Length: 185
Image (cartoon, rainbow, N blue to C red; front, top):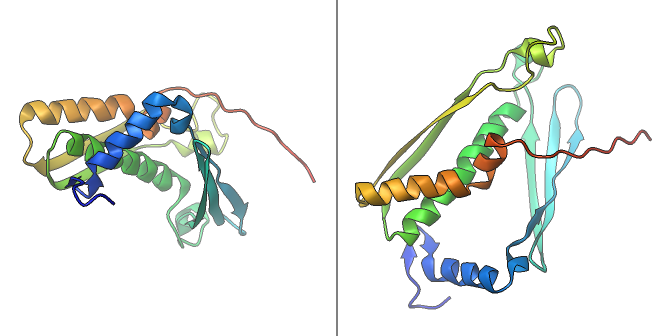
């Protein structure tokens, strides 16, 4: 790492700018391909494994496992967070990355950053008890609480940047095409 690199909020701003420049020069450098495989582990338990991803032409080895379960009240063993909690956590974490990067590019030093997201499901939709009830959220409400040395103008720009560029926020806020393949072995 260049010893003259500027670290702000744990982000190497020079490296971030270099990466963005490489994407400007060749848009293929900015293509990120993800793959997650989830296997059922009995009852409501499952485990998702992440073994690889691709960034541009680079193949990146990954080695992570995410355990999923439901609370006992929803027939689980309460051994891990449930899929809805992971969905909200993924939304929050993606936006956190956006706030940290945007603040760092604005030369704003963060003191704290927290996002709380809430949503309500009507399980009659999931259980198929009422076809008029959606199985998903009608809306999500999130609150971002941030402190640091930015001006109000900087904070507004940072917030608008994250709302405009966060992949998970975009994916949840907009309908995306889901293509499925169903295989019976």
